[in-house]
Amino acid sequence: MLALMRLLIFGLIVLTLLYLGISWYSRSQRRQKMEHDWEEAGRPGDREAYIEAGMIQYQHSLRRRLILLVYIVPVTTVAVVIYMTNFR
Image (cartoon, rainbow, N blue to C red; front, side, top):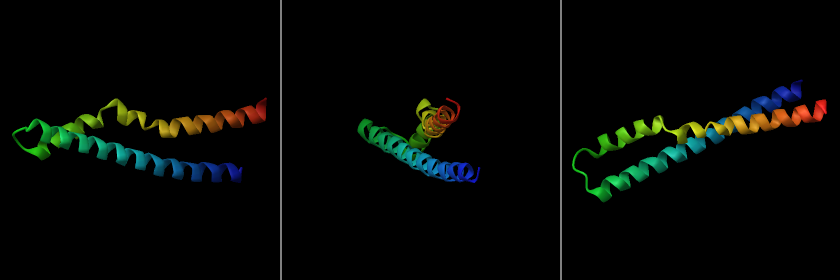
């Protein structure tokens, strides 16, 4: 039981670090793309307001939600492996 708890704790720490890294990278790529689009189009107006509006749209995007699969896929895989090993 202690080994399972250790696996869960360290696994969730690693998955959280991986999630934060992927999330940070995705946000920075989105912001960079929006900055490039703003410069390319020669948009008049406030650059920061344009970028912030786009980042608000990103908060509600499917891409941001798909990053949560970082938690779902490994946990499901480990659960299936444990089940198959013990009950088959």
